[in-house]
Image (cartoon, rainbow, N blue to C red; front, top):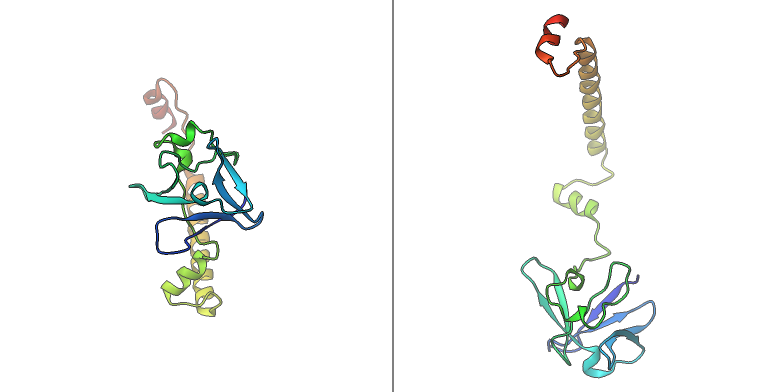
Length: 161
C-alpha cells in the first residue's frame, strides 16, 4: 500500500496518478489491467475524475471511459470485468490531506492554545467532577438490594421487599 498523487498537467480534465515511493504512473495495459509504468504512455495513463452523490471520487480511463480504476481490499487491482462495473464499491476513493491534524484544527476553532495552562486546568477540573460523580453512583448502586428475576418475577420481587 502506498500513497498515490493525482496530477493535472494543464487545465484539461485529464489526470495522471503517480506513486511517489515506486516512481511509477498508474496505467492500463493493452489487456486493460492496471499496471505501474515508469513512463507516461499517453491516454492509457490518463484518467478523468467523476464524483458520485456521496462524495466519492471515481477515476475512469481517457482511452476508454467504460474502464475504472479499482482495487480489492488486499490492494490488488480489479480484473478487467470488475473494473467495468460502475456500481462496484471497489472503485470509490476518498481524498484526504495527510498533513491535516484534527487536534490543531479544533484548537484554532476554540481559540485556545493546546499548551495553555487555563485549558489544562479546566480539563483537570472536569475530570475530577466526573470521577466524583462516578464514585457516588457506584456507592448508590451498592446500597440497593439484589433482586433475582426469573419467569415469575412479580412473586420474587414481593419476597425481597
